Amino acid sequence: MKLWRRATGALKDQNSLLAISLSRQTWYRNSDLEAAIIKATNHDESYVDYRNAQRVFTWIRTSPVSLKPLIWALTTRMEKTRNWVVAIKGLMLMHGVFCCKTPAVQRIGRLPFDLSNFTDGHSKPSKMWGFNTFIRSYFSFLDQRSALFYVQQNQTEEPMVQELVKLKNLQYLLDMLLQIKPMADNMKEVLITEAMDCVIIEIFDVYSRICKGIARVLLGIYSAGKLEATMALKILQKAKVQGEDLALYFEFCRNFGVFNALEVPKVTQIPEADIKDLERIINGVPEAKSYKNVNDEDENKAIVVKEDVAIVEEKGSNSRLKTIITDKWEIFEEDVNINYQGNHETSHFIATSSAENPPNYLPIVPVYQEKEIPDFICF
Image (cartoon, rainbow, N blue to C red; front, side, top):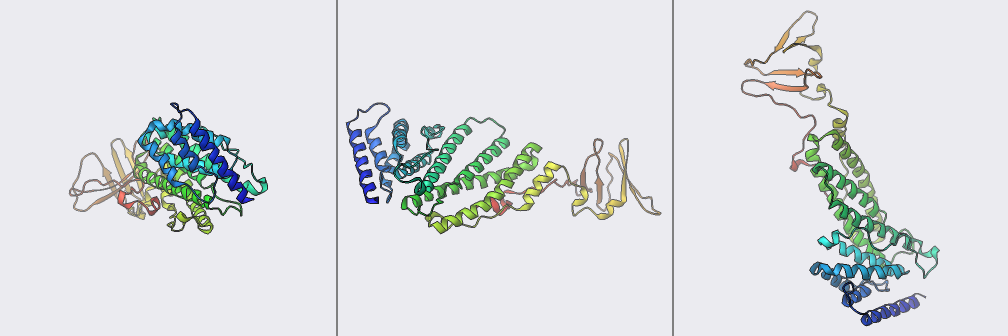
């Protein structure tokens, strides 16, 4: 039965090539390009014709005007087929076109063909449900990837907001990628393994973009507003969950035999401290006594504000020591620690002042230097 399907598939490919050779070439049809597409998406599930696939990619890189004939030929091929082999090879070819990253490719938008309800028409549904699900998931990812990349070209938000929106979209794409996997026992085919290699490479690319984006966000988020901090917190929480999902997905792919998943590095989880830092920004400034350089004995002091003078009084059974703060600087031989907090009339700061050491304000939350970014931001 399998040999019969392969023979009929080869005959269909030959008929398609014959029809192309007899067709008239127009502005939207290129017979040589169409022939390469037919050969790259042939019916043989035992191998992938990378030579003709590379010919298609070379056309796109060297001649952007070839994109319209390619889209027309591939759409015609995908809309006619009810064979899972042709469908997967067509999606892999479209995936490779996206990786060419030419300006014309970035403007494609939604895919011109629809495989969201694909069903193989040459075998029983009970045997092909895994292949059908795989093709639908693969198509959905490529369709959304193309649409999101097109939309991002026209975004005009603030740089920080735009970066956060881009990260949210990339995390959405990563979720879709993790849905692409063989779930039936009869899917240990060469073509499925080749397609999964393409998916793993795409996961590396998307996840590395997410990591680099999180690094940039963490470097600037502490000077951003509450809206940006809230968005960043959701992204970090999502990244923590996706890190766990990635570890499980890579383990599944290794057991299945996907070559590109055999040497996947361990996914480092996002530190809980980074999430708590963003929560502190959103919820407000913490108490001054939460810092280690603030003495516990400060709790025994009270602040009295009278006009332009602030007096720090020492609470004690017998002592009535006072520190008077004015706009005139006094020079002391020892540093003076001041804990000063209030609301509208007063400001929250912790300072150490002297003639040799000017005021030194502590940040609300730790600010990472670029070389000190936590390990989770990269593989």
